[in-house]
Image (cartoon, rainbow, N blue to C red):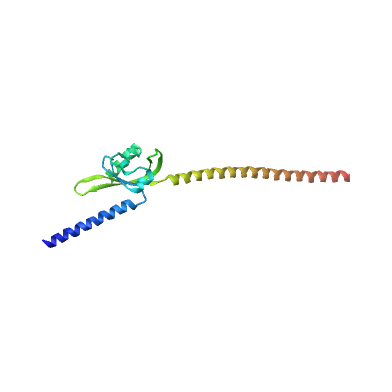
Length: 186
């Protein structure tokens, strides 16, 4: 009996350590995470989610994914995760508390409890705002470079045109000088 109680105590301690480990990992990860039930109701969010969106736990827990994601995207990603187990890299947007939309890549993973079936999905969001900003900067820089190249090509065409005209004029001058020499000789 004592041995059985020791095993139960050890298992309980192991479970408590595992729960603490999972909670620390969920809190520590820099990616915004949330856990939703099969209907899309938010059950839990991590600190990174709150930092990126500006919401606190009380703003989103118990609310639908649709309160901060575009409805069609949220429905499709959740449905796909529940049916296929995992969704990787779907571009969408999440809404912040200030009503701004942040471009993100969403990932989702079905959560299944043995013997009970699907009880929800984990969602993770990778913020694309900085990447999109850099893409716009690159596009603007490329446009400026294309304009400069076009300008340089125009200058090059003018310069080549000028050089060809100079060669043509030199040839005319040489011809006229020869004609003048011939005229003076005769």
